[in-house]
Length: 190
Image 1: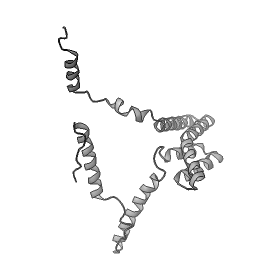
Image 2 (image 1 turned 90 degrees about the vertical axis):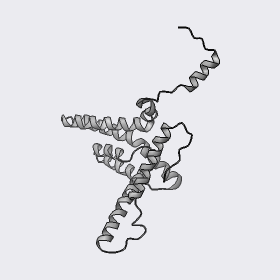
Image 3 (image 1 turned 120 degrees about the horizontal axis):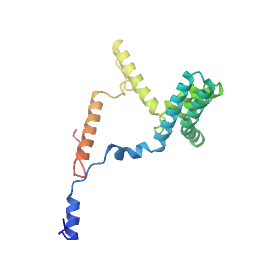
Protein backbone atom coordinates (compact mmCIF):
# COMPACT_ATOMS: atom_id res chain seq x y z
CA UNK A 1 0.00 0.00 0.00
CA UNK A 2 1.45 3.32 -1.07
CA UNK A 3 1.23 6.45 0.97
CA UNK A 4 -0.48 9.15 -1.12
CA UNK A 5 -0.53 11.86 1.59
CA UNK A 6 1.94 14.74 1.51
CA UNK A 7 4.23 15.37 4.50
CA UNK A 8 1.96 18.15 5.85
CA UNK A 9 -1.12 15.91 5.66
CA UNK A 10 0.72 13.11 7.46
CA UNK A 11 1.83 15.47 10.25
CA UNK A 12 -1.74 16.72 10.62
CA UNK A 13 -3.05 13.17 10.76
CA UNK A 14 -0.54 12.23 13.47
CA UNK A 15 -1.34 15.21 15.70
CA UNK A 16 -5.01 14.28 15.72
CA UNK A 17 -4.38 10.59 16.45
CA UNK A 18 -5.46 9.31 19.84
CA UNK A 19 -2.45 8.46 21.99
CA UNK A 20 -2.40 5.22 23.89
CA UNK A 21 -2.24 6.00 27.61
CA UNK A 22 0.97 4.81 29.26
CA UNK A 23 0.89 1.44 30.98
CA UNK A 24 1.25 0.87 34.71
CA UNK A 25 5.03 0.43 34.67
CA UNK A 26 5.56 3.41 32.38
CA UNK A 27 3.48 5.66 34.65
CA UNK A 28 5.27 4.63 37.85
CA UNK A 29 8.81 3.90 36.66
CA UNK A 30 10.06 7.16 38.24
CA UNK A 31 8.70 5.97 41.59
CA UNK A 32 9.96 2.38 41.23
CA UNK A 33 13.50 3.49 40.44
CA UNK A 34 13.71 6.43 42.83
CA UNK A 35 16.43 6.22 45.45
CA UNK A 36 13.86 6.13 48.28
CA UNK A 37 12.02 3.16 46.81
CA UNK A 38 15.22 1.23 46.06
CA UNK A 39 16.56 1.86 49.59
CA UNK A 40 13.25 0.79 51.16
CA UNK A 41 13.15 -2.34 48.97
CA UNK A 42 16.74 -3.29 49.83
CA UNK A 43 16.07 -2.67 53.52
CA UNK A 44 12.94 -4.83 53.46
CA UNK A 45 14.52 -7.67 51.47
CA UNK A 46 17.52 -7.82 53.83
CA UNK A 47 15.28 -7.74 56.90
CA UNK A 48 13.02 -10.53 55.57
CA UNK A 49 16.06 -12.62 54.62
CA UNK A 50 17.40 -12.03 58.14
CA UNK A 51 14.20 -13.42 59.66
CA UNK A 52 14.27 -16.42 57.31
CA UNK A 53 17.92 -17.17 58.13
CA UNK A 54 17.21 -16.66 61.84
CA UNK A 55 14.38 -19.21 61.63
CA UNK A 56 16.87 -21.78 60.31
CA UNK A 57 18.98 -21.33 63.45
CA UNK A 58 21.88 -19.40 61.89
CA UNK A 59 21.81 -16.36 64.18
CA UNK A 60 25.24 -14.97 63.22
CA UNK A 61 24.32 -14.83 59.51
CA UNK A 62 20.94 -13.33 60.41
CA UNK A 63 22.66 -10.63 62.48
CA UNK A 64 24.77 -9.60 59.48
CA UNK A 65 21.64 -9.33 57.31
CA UNK A 66 19.86 -7.29 59.99
CA UNK A 67 22.89 -5.03 60.39
CA UNK A 68 23.08 -4.46 56.62
CA UNK A 69 19.35 -3.69 56.59
CA UNK A 70 19.70 -1.19 59.43
CA UNK A 71 22.67 0.56 57.82
CA UNK A 72 21.12 0.77 54.34
CA UNK A 73 17.70 1.81 55.58
CA UNK A 74 19.08 4.05 58.28
CA UNK A 75 21.67 5.95 56.23
CA UNK A 76 19.18 8.46 54.77
CA UNK A 77 17.56 8.92 58.18
CA UNK A 78 20.97 9.46 59.85
CA UNK A 79 21.96 11.94 57.13
CA UNK A 80 18.75 13.95 57.45
CA UNK A 81 18.85 13.91 61.26
CA UNK A 82 22.50 14.99 61.37
CA UNK A 83 21.79 17.81 58.93
CA UNK A 84 18.88 19.02 61.03
CA UNK A 85 20.97 19.02 64.20
CA UNK A 86 23.99 20.72 62.63
CA UNK A 87 22.09 23.38 60.65
CA UNK A 88 19.20 24.25 62.95
CA UNK A 89 19.68 22.25 66.15
CA UNK A 90 16.30 20.74 65.34
CA UNK A 91 15.52 17.56 67.29
CA UNK A 92 12.99 15.80 65.08
CA UNK A 93 11.69 12.24 64.79
CA UNK A 94 14.66 11.33 62.61
CA UNK A 95 17.00 12.11 65.51
CA UNK A 96 14.98 9.89 67.85
CA UNK A 97 14.88 7.07 65.28
CA UNK A 98 18.65 7.41 64.77
CA UNK A 99 19.29 7.22 68.52
CA UNK A 100 17.06 4.15 68.82
CA UNK A 101 18.85 2.46 65.90
CA UNK A 102 22.32 3.19 67.25
CA UNK A 103 21.34 1.99 70.73
CA UNK A 104 19.89 -1.24 69.30
CA UNK A 105 23.08 -1.89 67.32
CA UNK A 106 25.30 -1.16 70.34
CA UNK A 107 23.49 -3.75 72.47
CA UNK A 108 23.47 -6.29 69.62
CA UNK A 109 19.74 -6.12 68.80
CA UNK A 110 20.29 -5.89 65.05
CA UNK A 111 16.77 -6.97 64.10
CA UNK A 112 15.38 -4.14 66.27
CA UNK A 113 17.72 -1.68 64.56
CA UNK A 114 16.52 -2.90 61.14
CA UNK A 115 12.93 -2.49 62.27
CA UNK A 116 13.58 1.10 63.33
CA UNK A 117 14.92 1.86 59.84
CA UNK A 118 11.53 0.96 58.37
CA UNK A 119 9.56 3.02 60.91
CA UNK A 120 10.23 6.43 59.33
CA UNK A 121 9.40 6.26 55.61
CA UNK A 122 12.21 7.60 53.47
CA UNK A 123 11.22 10.72 51.58
CA UNK A 124 8.51 11.79 54.02
CA UNK A 125 8.87 14.82 56.22
CA UNK A 126 10.17 13.88 59.63
CA UNK A 127 6.99 15.11 61.28
CA UNK A 128 4.99 12.54 59.31
CA UNK A 129 4.50 10.25 62.30
CA UNK A 130 3.85 13.09 64.72
CA UNK A 131 1.13 14.49 62.45
CA UNK A 132 -0.76 11.20 62.59
CA UNK A 133 -0.15 10.91 66.32
CA UNK A 134 -1.55 14.42 66.85
CA UNK A 135 -4.69 13.49 64.89
CA UNK A 136 -5.27 10.42 67.07
CA UNK A 137 -4.55 12.25 70.33
CA UNK A 138 -6.86 15.15 69.42
CA UNK A 139 -9.61 12.74 68.37
CA UNK A 140 -9.24 10.74 71.62
CA UNK A 141 -9.27 13.97 73.67
CA UNK A 142 -12.47 15.05 71.93
CA UNK A 143 -14.14 11.70 72.68
CA UNK A 144 -12.98 11.93 76.31
CA UNK A 145 -14.41 15.47 76.59
CA UNK A 146 -17.74 14.35 75.15
CA UNK A 147 -17.86 11.37 77.54
CA UNK A 148 -17.25 13.63 80.53
CA UNK A 149 -19.76 16.17 79.18
CA UNK A 150 -17.18 18.95 78.84
CA UNK A 151 -16.76 21.17 75.80
CA UNK A 152 -13.73 20.25 73.66
CA UNK A 153 -11.40 23.18 73.02
CA UNK A 154 -10.10 24.26 69.59
CA UNK A 155 -6.93 22.18 69.83
CA UNK A 156 -8.89 19.02 70.62
CA UNK A 157 -11.08 19.57 67.56
CA UNK A 158 -8.05 19.86 65.26
CA UNK A 159 -8.35 16.57 63.36
CA UNK A 160 -9.84 15.61 59.98
CA UNK A 161 -13.58 14.97 59.91
CA UNK A 162 -16.05 13.55 57.39
CA UNK A 163 -16.10 16.83 55.45
CA UNK A 164 -12.31 16.73 55.06
CA UNK A 165 -12.53 13.15 53.84
CA UNK A 166 -15.24 14.09 51.34
CA UNK A 167 -13.17 17.03 50.11
CA UNK A 168 -10.20 14.68 49.61
CA UNK A 169 -12.36 12.26 47.63
CA UNK A 170 -13.71 15.12 45.47
CA UNK A 171 -10.15 16.27 44.86
CA UNK A 172 -9.14 12.78 43.69
CA UNK A 173 -12.23 12.59 41.51
CA UNK A 174 -11.25 15.92 39.92
CA UNK A 175 -7.71 14.63 39.33
CA UNK A 176 -9.04 11.58 37.50
CA UNK A 177 -11.43 13.73 35.44
CA UNK A 178 -8.56 16.10 34.62
CA UNK A 179 -6.35 13.21 33.51
CA UNK A 180 -9.08 11.96 31.16
CA UNK A 181 -9.89 15.44 29.81
CA UNK A 182 -8.23 17.34 26.99
CA UNK A 183 -8.69 20.61 28.88
CA UNK A 184 -5.72 22.24 30.54
CA UNK A 185 -7.69 22.99 33.71
CA UNK A 186 -10.52 21.12 35.40
CA UNK A 187 -12.61 23.09 37.85
CA UNK A 188 -12.73 21.65 41.38
CA UNK A 189 -16.32 21.04 42.51
CA UNK A 190 -16.89 22.23 46.05
